Every structure is written in structure tokens, then in C-alpha cells.
Image 1 (cartoon, rainbow, N blue to C red):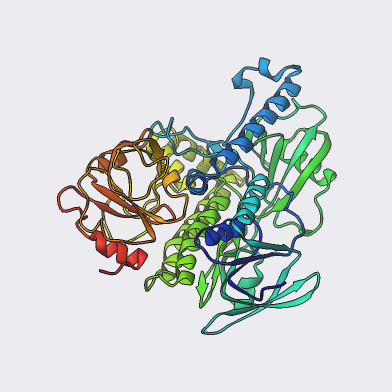
Image 2 (image 1 turned 135 degrees about the vertical axis):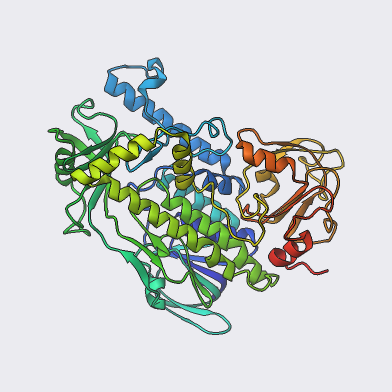
Length: 540
């Protein structure tokens, strides 16, 4: 390796590490990513991107690639459904015959999508983790991240000036110096263990298995989630994906490959059907081990993703929470490297993301409890299913699993401050923002397009500039006069809040850091200048 110093070393090349590396490059930091695996993990993992993760990736220009993956997955689902129905042309199938896309379920109990969400811009996407890793690896490399596979962290030492990482590579042992190091290296994180950070939580009580399978008789199993006396089975999640849960304790041979016979036996036990498998692809095991790092930061070393929190894969939440860890931390570390980070900015990462990890673990623990195959759980499950007939319960579950109701505590009671901004559509006036470009001449654009460069964004929504808006802050893009804001699909409460808002300040991670009200251009608690100082190091 030619260079022995990088601004940041990222340990772990899964989606969280790759997105973090890309965010750091967007912020101008030099990045080395080390990953012990030689190739992208092919086992079945997350299959859905939540709306907050989708919006974060849209802000970095990845919307088109995500859509292509989702469309191909839909075409594959059509072909599979056609084969099961004995139809030669998938186009002849009615849409009702194809089970595709994210399923709204809590512990396998399907709930209705809240009425206010239908047609919303804030939607989930059927993009699997492996496809996402390939997209993010290409994205990070194009931005200039140095990605080294078959490189494994073996030690680290930090001092007041930086971190020294010891890395085993195919060419021998390397000593790499960096200003900061981030562990994105999974539930068995070497970084966390080397730091001696406690991983607190609850141990495993079940064995889960999932894979993409081919059945000898495609009609042998019903699609959807099914709880039986032996556990849980879900079939048809995505394309021929099967998921089993048995409450017999953790797997005895957790490191051994999952065989066709093991997957078939588990499916037979949990379904009560004598199914026959012709093939199994990308099989994996999991448990309900749920733990969280006691610290997300120690000195110049940080933890993100599964290195900071592990849980059972119920509700399609973990990948999304990890990606949001990356976008929250990336711009803050980039600011520290660039020298403009205000006091306390790096500490805000743990303050904001630790509660999100705790909420994730509590949600998956509750789902685990509702899956158990005993009579008491059955009674509780029936009660829960009846409660799910109420719209308010469905809305709460939607918010719980997507994180759309979460707000970072920024010390401002304005109802929008601390939330992650939707990808609102904008119409810019002829005067245009401070910068020139094709989107700055009265044309329609959106928040994601305006934030592609990774800076903050100050939006004037009324044509009456808020107090302090003209202050020059290189790290914030100013759009001084927008004539239109399309909030289609936004819930009524947020729409009402926007109607009473004159300006918005967004951080690079999409968080609304300040909202102005008509008149003095400031919210009751925090002025725009105070917000600029706090998040962007602005000076008067």
C-alpha cells in the first residue's frame, strides 16, 4: 500500500461501511475501507429498504439504480408466479397472482398500510442487501474510496493525534495511521472487542433459517406468514424466499453451512407439510440475540451498524437503521477532518443514534415474543391481531418499523425540527439560488437533487428571507426563494406545520435542524444563526 495515512479507516465492507466510505468521500475525506471477505456475501439477508434509507440514497444520486434493481426483482417474481400457475407468459397473470414488494407485518401479523401513507413519496423499496452492496461499492469507488478486500484488522492503538490500525493483508502485516477509525464490521466486531466495549442485551433462544428455494411442487406451501405448533414459516417473501423460526434454542452448529436437508427438515417441521426441495440458494441461519454497544464512540474510534447493535431480522429494520448510522456519522467525521466541526458535533452521533438502536432491539424482541408457539402467546397474538383493526395501531406499527416518527432531540420544540426531511418537490423562482445550474432557473427540482453535493441546505419557502440567511457559510447551500413546495402524500399534520413555516435548515444527513416561522424568521426556541453555529460552525 503506497499511502500509510488516511483521514478515516473504515473496518467492514457491508452496506453500512460502504455507504459511510462514500459519505466521507463526498465530504472530501481520504478513506481506506478494509474488508476480510474476498467477495460480497451471497447469503440471504435484508430484502427491503425503508423510506428513510431510500431518501438518504436518493440524496446521493442512487435513485435510478435502486429502481432498476426493484424492477428486475418484480420481473423475476412475475416469472416465478407464472411457473407456479402453469402460465407460459407472465404478462397474462393478473396482478393479484403476484406477491411482490414489502409486506406490512409485525411478528408475521399483516397490518394495513395507513391511509395517509398510500400514494406517499415516502415509500419502501424491494431492494435486497446483496444488490445494494454492489451498488454502494461502485458508488464508493467512483468517489475515490480505497477499498481493500482480504484485509483484516488485527489491532488498533489510539492517541491524542490519531489511530494506528494493524491490518493483515495478502502481502503481509500493515500499520496504517488515520485520524479516525470506524468499526462497521458486524455483530462480532473486532473493533468493538479490541476496544473492550460492553455488548449488553439478551441471548439467543431460537434458531431461524432463510434461503431462496425451489420446490418440487410450487403449490405445496401457501404464500405468506404462518404460525404453527412448531414455530413460524413464511414463504414467498420476494422470489421463492423461505423463512423458518423454531424455538428450540440457538443452533448447535452455527458455523456449519446450511444444507438442503437441514432447510427441508425445518420447513417440514414448521409447516406440517411434507415438502420436497429441489435446490437451495444462499441459505443462512440466525437467532434472536439482541445486544447494543454501551458506547458508540471511544476517543477517535466509532461503531456503526451491526457492530453497534444486533437483533433478529424481524420487520426489515436492521439494515435501514445501520444505513442511517452511516449518513449521520459521515458528514460529522468529514467536518472534523476538514477542521470546521463545531464543539460537540462528534458527540451528537451517539446521542442521536443510540436511542434508534435501542428502539430497534425493543421492536424485534416484541416480535420474537409474539411468535412463540405456546398457548399463552397464542392468546396474546389473537388480542394483538384484534387491536390491529384500529387505524391508530396500524399507524403506530408503520412508524415503529419505518422510523418515520423518530425525531432527534435538538433542543427545539418545533414539530419539524429533529425529523428527517422527505424528498419534497420544489419549484425554484427565476431569481434562482446562489449557485447557477440547470435546476436553478425556475425549473422543478427536489430536495434530493439540491443535496447531491453533501452540504447543508437552507430553503426560503416564502420569498421573505429569514434573519441571518445571507450569512456566507460554505458548508450550506442557500436557496433564497422557492415559489412552490409539493408535499404530495405528506400526512396532514406535517402539511399544516409546513404551511406555518417560512424557512428550513437541513443538515447533510437530511435532518431538519431549524424551522423558521413567518415574521422574525426564527422558531421560538432557536434562531437561525444559533443553528448555523451549532451544526456548521458559522461565525458572526
